Each structure stands twice: as structure tokens, then as C-alpha cells.
Amino acid sequence: MTFSPLVMPSHLEELIAALRCLPGVGPKSAQRMAYHLLQRDRAGALRLALSLDLAASNIQHCSKCNNFSEHDVCALCASPKRDADLLCVVEMPADLLMMEQAQCYRGMYFVLMGRLSPLDGIGAKELHFERLLKRVQEHTREVILATNYTVEGDATAHYLATLLHSHGIKVSRIARGLPVGGELEQVDSGTLAQAVLERREMMI
Image 1 (cartoon, rainbow, N blue to C red):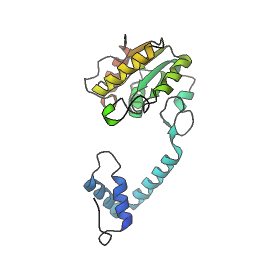
Image 2 (image 1 turned 90 degrees about the vertical axis):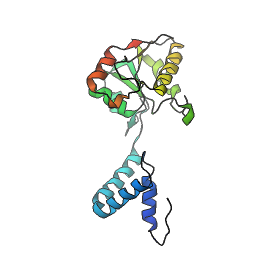
Image 3 (image 1 turned 120 degrees about the horizontal axis):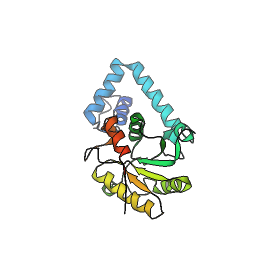
Image 4 (image 1 turned 120 degrees about the vertical axis):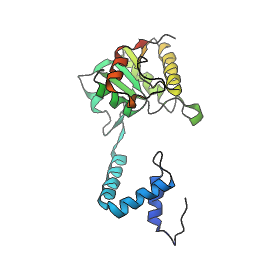
């Protein structure tokens, strides 16, 4: 959506355009958000701007698990209480949080930040499979694939299982207690815990 400079101040136009970068936010929604922040919640707008600036400037990817972190190695990876011989591979940070809330797993993680989707231009390189393989080869007894039971999640799990098996690594996958087509972040903790406990070794 474009606006005439005679109708709308350029800063407002830029704000609306910036808000459209959010997933699921179209021109009308971005416009409503911008008007709300400026008219009814200026303090919230300033807080949002500061928080975004701080997050963008200080949050990076953990060098071990690839999750978001303010340090080179996140607190979870640095914890001596975790089982370093187990590595759980998840698609997104929200999936890691769901696993932790289920309190069924005490190993380490690797966050792919996505899943294989050739149509969207997302391949092995974009998902850092080389970093994952290097991490696994350090000292890992078992890799648990906790990708979602979707078409893309299944393809990602199969690709990773083939890759890891070729390097002699034991691979398992969380059980199908999860609904087909379901995503981890939307599943209750009890169902997820059972799926982890009943995981099956993947044979290629």
C-alpha cells in the first residue's frame, strides 16, 4: 500500500511498512497497529521500539545449539546438569521450549530454525546441517529427531536420519503420539512427554 505524502506523514508510512514484515500482517492490520500505538499507547510504542533495538543488537545464535542467545554459548548448553550424550533436534525455538515444559528430556538440543522446503528455497545449507553433524561427532550417543509430523518435518527427519546413519550415529524419532500434521508447540506437554519416552530408532 502506498500513500500520498500530502495525506500521510512519511514516518507513519514507514511505520506501517515496517509492521508488515510480521507474519500474517497485511496492509490493513499494519495500519490499525500503527494507529493504535500512536493514538492510544505511545508508551507501549516506545517500549516496543527499545525492545526491538536491544533484541536485534544483542541476540545471536548459540554456537552449539543454534538457539537464540545473548551469549556465544547459551545457558542450557553451558549447564553441567544436562546429558551431553543425548542430542534432540527440533525445528524452532518454540519447539525447544515445549520440550522443556514437558520435563521429559534432560539432554542437549540443536535448533534447525526451519525445515526442508525446496519450494521455499530452504535446503540443507540453510538449516546448518554441517554444524549439526560437527556437533554430533563431538560426543553424542543418540540423536533424537523431534521434527513435526508434517510433510516437511517428515522429509527433514528422513534426510537427517540418512545423513547421521552414514556416519554411524544412532538415530531415533519421537513416537507418533503426536497428531499427523501437528506441530510440537501446539501439543500438550503430557502427549509430548509420552512421544519422547516412546521414541523409536530410525532404521535406514
